[in-house]
Length: 161
Image 1 (spheres, rainbow, N blue to C red):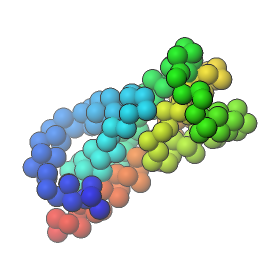
Image 2: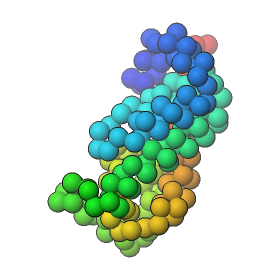
Image 3: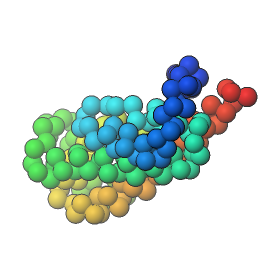
Image 4: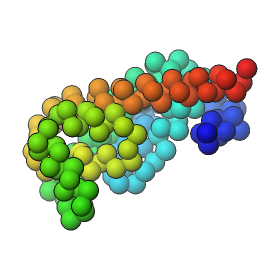
């Protein structure tokens, strides 16, 4: 509801941002997902931009940016520089990734979860090949971005009619 109200209040700014098109969405979401354990409102951009641009294009651009951005958490774990290893959720997520592998990554990537970076760190620590991590994250991101984009498109369309 708050995102919808924000889209309504900042409709002019959203339309200006639409001038950057799908590459702009890709870059903004990539940057927002490249932060590790610091939530940045990339989904709000997806939600708002789907009222101006086609939601399918918004979802695909955002999913690609999100999947590339998630590699930062993976690389942090792979390099051994993860600082979250004593966190209880990290231990649980690492066990899921170890036991279920890619399907766990896909499901967790499909959920709007600000702590997905922990999944990337766990996959990196477990030395999952980067291409496998990416190939499981990407469809999860597509699923998540599709429902965020279409929800944004439908709610903003409803407000502006």
